[in-house]
Amino acid sequence: MNLQDTSSQLILGIESSCDDTAAAVVRHHGGKDGQRRSVVLSSIVKGQDDSHAPFGGVVPEIAARAHASRLDQVTEEALSQAGVAAADLDLIAATGGPGLMGGVMSGLTFAKGLALASQLPLIPVNHLAGHALSVGLEQDVPFPYLLLLVSGGHTQLLMVEGVTQFRRLGTTIDDAAGEAFDKTAKLLGLEGPGGPAIQRLAKAGDPSKVSLPRPLWKRPGCDFSFSGLKTAVRQQVAAEMPLSPERQADIAAAFQKTAVAHLAVRTENAMCAALTQSPVHHLVAAGGVAANEALRDALRQLADRYDWQLIVPSLRYCTDNAAMIAHAGGLMQAEGMAPDQDALAFSPRARWPLDEKEDATTLGKGRKGRKV
Image 1: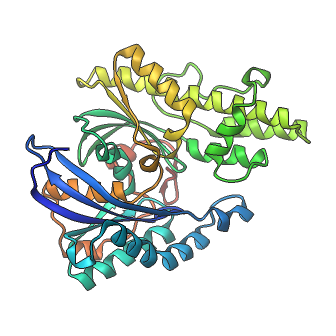
Image 2: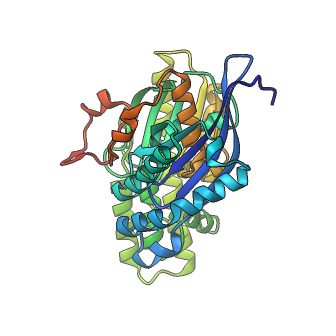
Image 3: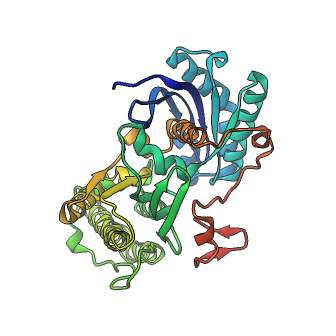
């Protein structure tokens, strides 16, 4: 990659929004063409699957304690792998939300302490913006582009019009896709992260042998719903217990096929809506569920049909990581969002929508704001 080293910066990223403790160092450059690029020097991610496995899901308090005990070690490892010292850094970018409150608080507090001790500027980054901009870690994608953000806690369709400009076209009205994969895996007695477990088992199954309802079938719009699909799987499993291995595989295959079809149909609706408002021909999929092979195949077929370009970050950048947070922080600073003392007073946020104006008018509110 030919880069002209204009305002090159070393940025440390910190990510702790769920159950992965992550730190990364990137070198952020300005190129001859005016594009901003990041070269990843290190990216360390420590998961907590073993700690949460006995409980069948992520326990917020356990996650927060694990983050607090690992953040210094993960950061030291990231700096060592990058071959730099804290004194060499120019900026710290840390997830400020949304996510599990204890996890976000652990990471942001650690970043604040490091920023104060090292006298470095700090930028709190929206975790969703990290995912939305993560595609830029590997290639240049011009704004605007349509983003399918699909993860354990979020399922949204967004027009990404700039580094800090997001317009939401659709969101889930109940549960996120990743949550549905995790709950289905638990119902089927599968171990490990739900998404990969369902994908593996589905390859041995026949989806035509299980009938599941298609969410929001024939309804217009770009919103998603996975609650009814989860309920249908639960009822199917309860009615047929104990399940044979073959039946387990068939249910997994049917669930995956139905969930992927739902995501693809709503994405197609968003593509048609986007074309009426802006000249966009790039579809980006990000978030942990974007690593699913069946979903990638469905989106690739969809992009080919409309002569769009599908871009999906590598697996290491689809799931939660700190390189995307460092990259987003560098872009934000380049856009003129210079960090100041206010960053040290920034409060961690369990909810932090990218499109706050749209969030105020969307269905699905709870006592503390939107669930996803």
